[in-house]
Length: 378
Image (tube, rainbow, N blue to C red; front, side):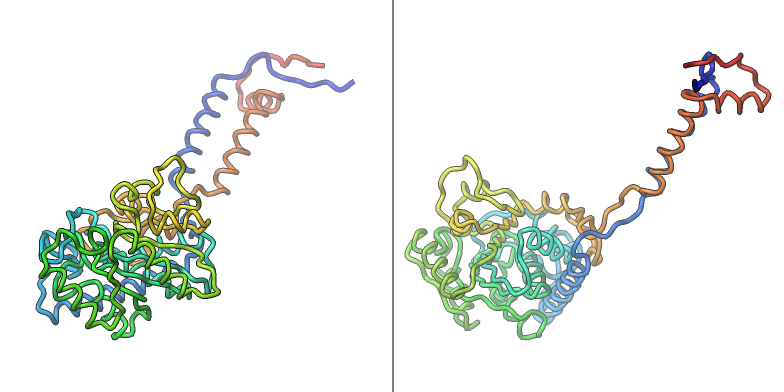
């Protein structure tokens, strides 16, 4: 018959020692975390570097135009922030949100969303841009170029406050500049005024004419819908005709373009970021996003940018231009499995030695501490 031994009682000193070991181990696990690169790290870095190059190119262009960044609205000195109010301003806008988009690492966020949406090299992606978040538009294009995708772009060119609302340098001009400087390779298939009903309702006639003239000068076809429904139908036809036999694998919306999101109500039905399925329980608002979602196409909704920035570890309203590679979108601090595993084994061994066997008892005896005789257990 095999005899098992245990002490009459577990030493308090041993219990304290085990507790101390656990506490020290916990602190070590928390202190010595390791940085783990996220998925698609190389693509994310490349896209962010390209976005940074594009930002710098646009900043130099603004300098040539004698534009001086306002240190209050444009603390990074990027030259990419618009004005409070101009003739081509379509709506109110959040200054903090616009400042947050001046970050090339948003290109990495777009890479992450596209990849998680199942988009692969060579795929066709439909895009709806507005002039409200031009820096975010640039990040999207940088991601498209690095991933070697085929973007089908339709742009509306009115802009909310602090967006691309400089009458002499609208979004369509940003796009043209980046192509001419050979930084990015993509142009819009068509461009509209934007704003209410995609026709700039509520803007002055002079403001609307400034936008139309800029579009005509750019060489991009001018899209002139009759009303909201006509704009949705025209856009869908442009996308479908341009895609041809190739399926559209994702739709990317930037900002709150009326026909893209479906008015102010539709704007908040979809979650910020990647939407793999149509929203549940939302009102039936006809829009480009809802039509693609109903067809099973993943929708990337780039709005509420501060929320997205926090989710991916990007700076909110940065005081200086964030360096490429900054944010949890690239890498995360994770627990070291070797330290955690070693600690667990040490605690289990200590518990076994002092609670389940007489090893701890004998060690205490060797140390000169007598705690009574062991009791036999059958």
